[in-house]
Length: 322
Image 1 (cartoon, rainbow, N blue to C red):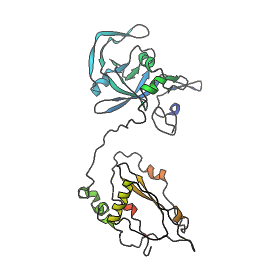
Image 2 (tube, one colour):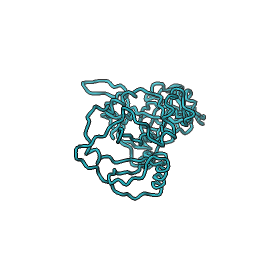
Image 3 (cartoon, one colour):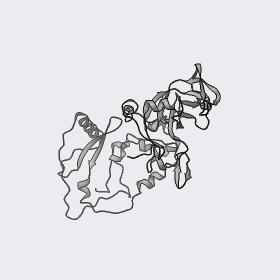
Image 4 (cartoon, rainbow, N blue to C red):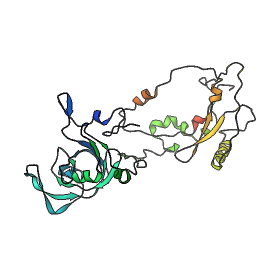
């Protein structure tokens, strides 16, 4: 999957990222005033994203004092203070760096993570500045034509990127909105209480006018199944399903493939291979909603709730006599 290095989204690459810093047009070509990369500072209770300026002329790594104060980042005094001057040897700000932050969890882009300390200065335009020490340590490959960081050094692949596959995503807030037991449903879902009933899942519902009929092609023979070996957990799941009435014994020669798929919670999800039956079923074409159109309705959403009904989807019910 090709993702934008700057914002992590798909559909474009970093040079054309809509969130990239502004550039000027000179003679029909883009002129980048500075090289900025997205970085994240991880604190004890939050994760803050800010743009960082890569400056090979800076002798140290810097952070804006206003940002330090706003986030409550711990600092300690520099002994002795460090003199700081501009390219014309004139002092910058007060002319001295008097304090330094503690080591912070610091991430560049999506996966490059390290612990880094910053000297505190006044730099509201560029709240984080990665200087020559940072460039020397990581030795990244930079495309000055496109104004982006292209590749990390081999040392970073072993030191800073080794956990990129297993690193969990950070979220702003995850909490259980309400217990999932039937007796503690929110009032808004009270009318659907039966959907979460463990008793109802043990049997099929009564036939209704909206039951779906499965009509077979004329002279079609139902497919035959095969016997598959089961593991010990699968055998126990089958015994439980027989006991509660989800399945029943049958001597019919017609059958469909049945297997289990592991669930995230360690359980087993029963799946049935109906492809053989589908080949002899009278097709009834009707429009289905497009997945992108369905996902579009969630765009801009902030609060998402996960509810789990009992395994009702496995209780397929044919029309009367099916």
